[in-house]
Length: 185
Image 1 (tube, rainbow, N blue to C red):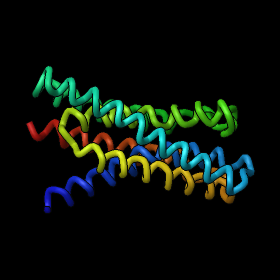
Image 2 (image 1 turned 180 degrees about the horizontal axis):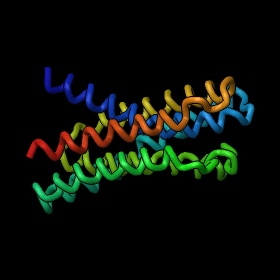
Image 3 (image 1 turned 120 degrees about the vertical axis):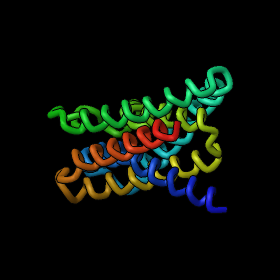
């Protein structure tokens, strides 16, 4: 029972880290003066992508784990560290990412893919380590959906005062898990 609780807490933290990307971009998107109906639709779309992408990653990770064993586990830990560093690095770039894409039609698709690509990589790592698929997908989908809604709603009210720091926080969490995975060997 305690191992399930531990895994659940780990997955919730990872879902939070991955959702911070959607949250920070949602802050910028929220400044488009979106209606609540549009915010609801955007959050659900992001949540679905955070289910689909890690599922693909888990499938690929399980295949790699069966083929390459311990080596794949090392790759999974390194992948989380690289992803965390990339998130921190991108959070401090001075580009205005959200201003060019509107969250409707193709823009919503591009937005959804861009904020869920990192969940594929994390899914790959979790597949290598044999995480419970349904629990991963539930945590990642719900976390991304809720954090997207929160980012969009706050973005309606605030002019992006937390965006950079939230993505850096998410990257730090993923790096910590990567280091933890490598230290287990």
